Length: 246
Ligand SMILES: C[S@@+](CC[C@H](N)C(=O)[O-])C[C@H]1O[C@@H](n2cnc3c(N)ncnc32)[C@H](O)[C@@H]1O
Image 1 (cartoon, rainbow, N blue to C red):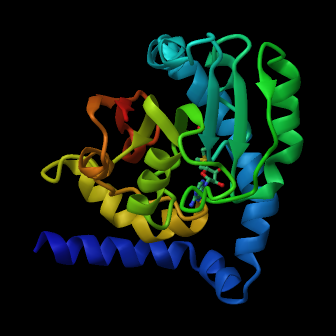
Image 2: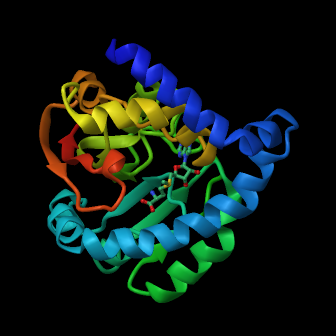
C-alpha cells in the first residue's frame, strides 16, 4: 500500500514539474542547469549551508595537518569542488588541487580563491571523480568531497580513484547527505521527490547508502558518524561525516 502512495505522490510531483521534464526532453534543461541554474543555486545554498555547518566543518577539518608529509607540507585534492565552499576550513599554506566535471563554476571559484589567500592553488582539472587519471598514484596527502557522492555516476570507481591517488597513511574527508532510515517519513518523502530532485539538481540522488560504499572501499581505518543537519529541506537532513585513512 505504501508503495502505491509513494508512486502516486511521485507522479503528482512529476506532473507539477512537467515544464521541467519537457525542457529536459527537448535537451534545453541540462545545459541551462549546468551553466546557469546550478552554479547560481549552489552559491546561495552553500552560504546558508556553511553557516549552519560551521562548527561541524571546523571539527571535521581541524586535524588535516596530521596527514602532512614529513617536511610539513600538505597537498589536498578536492573532488567536485563546485564554488570552493570548503577553502576557508583548510589549513594555511596547504596546496589545493581542485577538480570538477562542470567547468561553469570558474567565476565563483575564482572569487572563493581570492577570499582564501591562505592557500596555494594548483591547476584546476575539469574531470569527474571516476577519472582522476591526471593525478598520479599516491601523490596527495588528503582527498576531500562534500555533497558530491550523491551525484557521482559510479561511487565504487570514485572511491577506487580516491584510494589510488592517496599516499599510504593519507586521509579521505567526506561530508555527504544520505538516505534516511527506511521506516521514517523523511525516507517516504525522499522517495517521492527523488526523480524530480535528480533532474532539478544536476543528478543529485536522495537515497544513497553512501556509508556502505565507503566501508567496502579499501581503507585501513574509518571514522564515520551519522548526523542530522538542521536544513529547511528535511530530505537532505540525514548526513554522514568523517574521514577514512588509506
Ligand atoms: C552539491 S555540489 C557540492 C559542491 C561542493 N563540494 C560543496 O560542498 O559546496 C555537487 C558537486 O559535485 C560535482 N559532481 C557531479 N558529478 C560529479 C562526479 N561524477 N565527480 C565529481 N564531481 C561531481 C558537481 O559538478 C558539483 O560541483
